Image 1 (cartoon, rainbow, N blue to C red):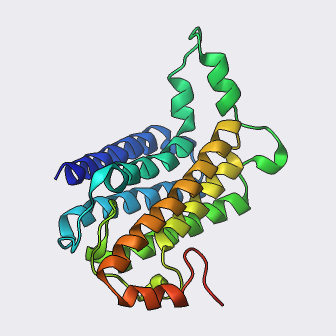
Image 2: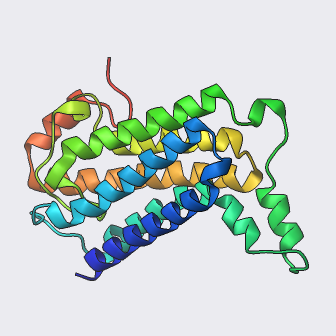
Image 3: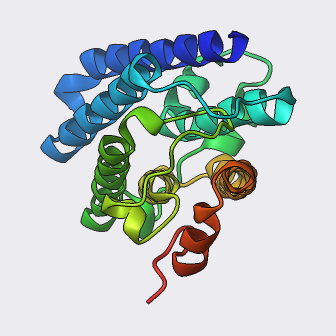
Length: 225
């Protein structure tokens, strides 16, 4: 129950923060950024609604690694998306402002700025995540829980399309918000998601024997051609 309440509060906070950002910055965003911002809002809203529509787990999450750790993984992309908000917390005269700017200072290199390729990654990643949620439906889970596995839609090709979509979207953001801190956060996010996927698969294998055959014929994050 604590995990469910924490998850609901987390996504409500995500949605409120992101919508407030869009309202405040809407006029300064270009058309592609506006579309992506709305896609992110819809994705977070679907995550939140899934908490109320999903079925009861066959096997629930237990312990810190299966409850708190997934929430930590979910927070990491937001730190990259809204690193500008982090910098604003350290205004002029703050003793740690220079240190924060050295970590989150955005590179001015022409190959690392907002461009068509980075936006394509962001839009493609968020679209894959959205499609994964729509197919996952009532089997959605943030915690490491076992619900009825889904084998159709994007799950026919990869076992973790949500993680693939999130990784593509975050990599696109990294291209035009390139900084030392964001590079570290990005690779930390990839590592954490890979560990999280192993926890989830171990839980599913312990409950659904057919998941073993599915696991042999599909890739974790990329299709097996």
